[in-house]
Amino acid sequence: MISQAAPTFADIVAARRRIAGLIRSTPLVTAAELGTVSLKVESLQETGSFKVRGAANALLMLDAAERAAGVVAVSSGNHGRAVAFVARSLGIAATVCVSARVPAVKVEAIGALGARVVVGGPGQDEAEAAAHRLGLETGATFIHPFDDPRVIAGQGTLGCDIVEAAPDTSTIVVPLSGGGLISGLALAAKALRPRIKVIGVSQDRGPAMYDSLRAGRLTDVVEEDTLADALAGGLGAENRHTLRMCRDLLDDVVLVSEEEIAAAMRHLRRRHGLRVEGGGAVGVAALLAGKVDATVATVAVISGGNVADETWERVTG
Image 1 (cartoon, one colour):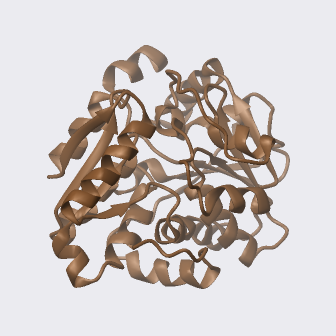
Image 2: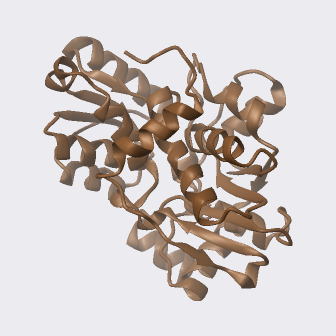
């Protein structure tokens, strides 16, 4: 059962100890061509994205009965892959519900890790409804991709890592979708360095959190095809944590276009030899487009690298 209590910095510290054996220490790479900028390369993390942090913390906190009953998740790709990886490591049965929009390369990667994959409908909302139904039918624990205190605390460990590795950081630029990563990261970073700024970056096609923050309430999102497919989808009908945390903790949110995302993907390949998916490149897109000040010490989170070969070559080749 998901706790109703919002995560605390103490929860993030505990998560950092808990998940240490299941995650990698990813590099911080200088990107002087962008300004006073470093890249936190979570695309080199286990399963190719930061998502393994939250999945590991959530699954490691299950009791024996919950582990025996298995887990079910909904995902636009990377969360499902992370849940499948951690579940296999811990001997837990996993089912992942996806929408028909999730790229085949991500669906195949989830299945290759031993999880059962179910296409729950045309969009993320339908896939989430299917996951909840399966949880009720089977007794499996639902592992939310972002609005779960255990997941948020796990993602927040990235904030600790960044501040520890680069204590003079003034700004952290973070891809923003449902808010699990940025809310946990901001909570941790601001606990350690209260003056640090955290800026979210979303695609301009269906930016659910951006629209909800501007409206001051949960808003519906019309999903559109985007290079940043990992950032697609809504916030859920009963968002308990991330909307409020983003409202309270973020200093700004900016949007980037498809052309700006593609330019960032090309830049990361040509200048740094990094394979980065569209959702993972949005922070660099904002920096290249001059939408974020790069004259102060800035860390841009490269959140994931799981992109289909044909998309990668079409965009960056």
